[in-house]
Image 1 (cartoon, protein in one colour):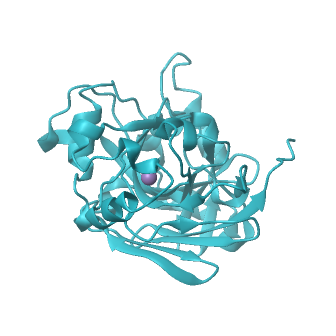
Image 2 (cartoon, protein in one colour):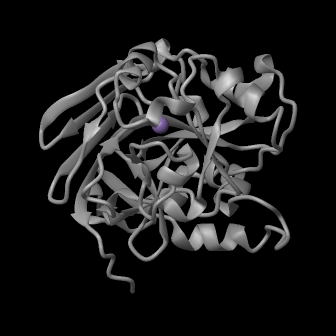
Amino acid sequence: MRLCRFDDDRLGAVRGREVYDITALRDQALATVPRDQRGDPLIAILPALTALPETTLEDCRRLGVDAVRLLSPIRFPTKIIAAGDNYRAHYQEMRADPSGSFGHGNADMTKAGLFLKAVTSLVGPSEGIAVRFPERRTDHEVELVAVIGTKGADIPRAAALEYVAGYCLGLDITVRGPEDRSFRKSIDTYTVLGPWFVTADEVDPRDVHLALYLNGELKQDAATSELVNDVARIIEYASSFYTLFPGDLIYTGTPAGVGPIRAGDRLRAEGRGIGVMDVAVRAWPEKHA
Ligand code: MN
């Protein structure tokens, strides 16, 4: 099942090029979720949503997928965990980066560690990216993102994928430089998630082909089969430090081909078997609603 959050916080089931508006059904299911439950409420009601009868869906209003504004499918992750230097060719290109970003770099995850991105940096594709420091190199990084479905700590690798509710595409937008990764990668709008959430039964995380186009030109092109540490290993390692909660996001690292973005650019991220998302890049300052 594919679920998108769209327009004014509505929920849709995505089928082909159509979105079935299941907002009312979501709101009914949400009424049963305990208020003090930690984690994203969408994950809490997934069993109810995936069990929706076909006849119920057919009664829902339908919209074209291009006619809705896609928001981040996950709204309230308790944390966004990210792996760096998790493709060998990207590790090599970062070694050659003169900006000082590589100061923390190490191909061994147990030495470099993972890093956290601020949850306030999270946006959906329709919200776009606002480049805050145009004088500094700011890069696109396309990534497979795993969404945690079950609370867990000290999760063994062999069981790790059972803790995943589903997958999305992500952009880990990054200012290059010597500061801590969490600091440089947590600017408002610098974590994009979309185009929708795909339940885990539909995705093999070991074989997702990723592509990133900048203004129509292919820049990143790789498969998650090339990950140094796969999704299961990252979850094992992350959960040896932190308890994972439903809706927590795991950005799994970007392949080679990262490069600068500027206001006016258009990014297209593709994940085979997941979807395609278009993201516009604009200049800071933000116009806050
Ligand atoms: Mn990254």
